[in-house]
Length: 383
Image (cartoon, rainbow, N blue to C red; front, side, top):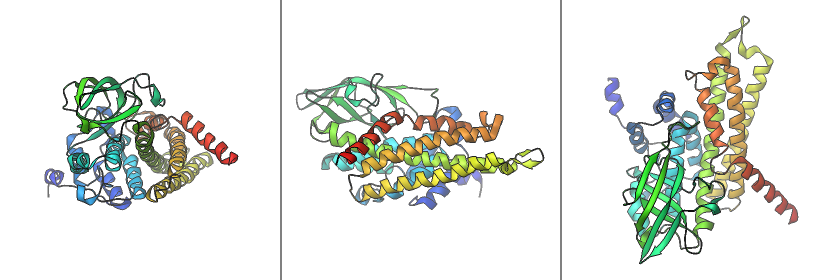
């Protein structure tokens, strides 16, 4: 069978870590470096992800999903993150919108958008950040003004992962009394997508700036009742995104470990493999320890999500903080182990280094996470 014919064959469904591992090794790992250099992923990959059922497998079977539990979803996002953080980022934002729809959407909204999101026929993106508002969501200036039976949306969102590809945006804006969440189709008049290129990391995640100019939306655009979005909807969506980033950070650590163990086994220094040096062994030992610890923290957060335990919010904060910090640290060590080769585009550790830095910033910067985690410790002490 020719390679050309093989390229046209659909991917098998991905239902667990083992099938995700095989999918990533075949369809993502060999090409991730080229996508990073190009600053984009090909349309063919998006179709393969759809064939594999990866866009929103947690959605109910009646919508076309697999009803997947959150622990398994985290494991799959880890595997994808091991192969390419840009691809995992696209899954993350699509997951955030799809989860919000399934959790807070009306029956009409769920039926309108759910099947297309599950099938990957419509891609979603999450719009919160602005030029002057990142971790401080209360500082957003995008407005949603009631007009007749609907809304008029004005503002500009920035750093929108998948913004160049998305068909549907979940937009958070200031309403007349509080924040509101709105579903905005890309095709709505007044929506303008401006690509953002040449970022430090996750360079193929198709970032964009999204401008909304007098965008008229119907009553059905609102997700959750007005005044509810800034609490449950936003907190829930960010928690799911943070969970995916935590899992993807575990994938980066695993990729750094794999690359470092392989390189140090073959690189000869002074007549002996680099792996024989005690300092190299110490670096690899720390990678082994931290990847297991981070994986366990993610699994705990996922189990709490599946159990409906509100403790999952803090568990996810901790998992994301630990995993992203460890990913950045070990990506630095992986580059060091590779020496000058680690600074070249011919070895993947340079990409891991850049992507890991992004993990420390997105879905709540590590500084904000430390404040939040410490605050919980003080509340526990007071109780």
